[in-house]
Length: 338
Image (cartoon, rainbow, N blue to C red; front, side, top):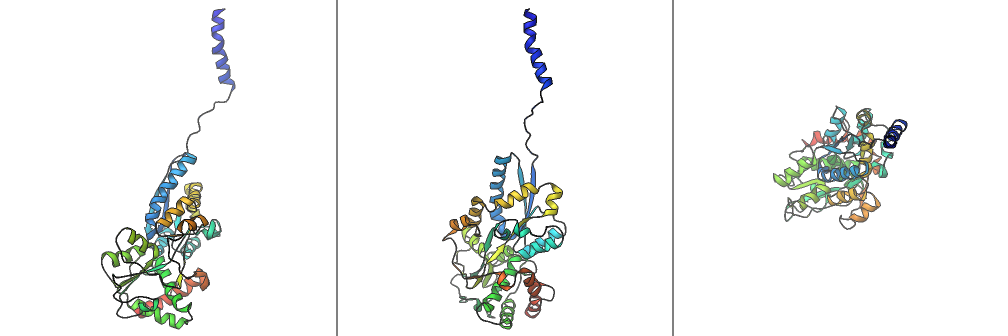
């Protein structure tokens, strides 16, 4: 009797084990890595945002995500992606560069409608650095067209920021009543005053700040803010009006994320760029946020400027052909200014 009683729990246990499904603890997803290809001046912000997203994603999903950032001139980065650099996400200086990757068959059409603000989480504008005491008396756009002023600005063929510089200079004339002929003459004069054309925004800053080249530098407002924050440049920068509001988009590279199986986390990362945490990091690193929460946080951190946009010139497809396509206005001006 005792033997029979003692056997009952074992029999019951065996029956329960054999007759019921086995429930295993859910295993966390395998770690994934994302490659984010961006333009030079975003590195400081993304170094922080990568860590924030990785921690948030780990907490919510249990999955470990690591990042590889690639930085350089936006035009050069665009070409690298088209030529085979595997980017899960591109964060570029202008929609025109994303469109080129789309035309190469790597990004699906309609990418700009997938996230808020035309898939543009950040804005900036063009700032003007001058030497301490402003010895060349640079106080307006027109002061740059002076043979005694050595201008430093990046090359529009390789740098997205440089294309925004070009549009800022063009709009400085055409948005204030000047003709296109006058704009051509003005910009030709400015580029004649540039001894060298660095390949990207960061190299242009290094030339002016670290190597002491030139009398004045045109670059991202972001670069001016970061240089002052790091103590590399203490002279106040200038923002001239009217100025161009630069719009810097971000999107996943569809062909890459589908092949690598990273779409879910890549899309989540892009959405995270609109979160209050990420918008705060962008604002703290010199980018103008685009969300209502980001703008509220950034209130008072940026100078007020009268802006025009690339849409005022018809949008990037036409602008790219007219100004920066083969034989376009930039090529013509470059030929006259070298």
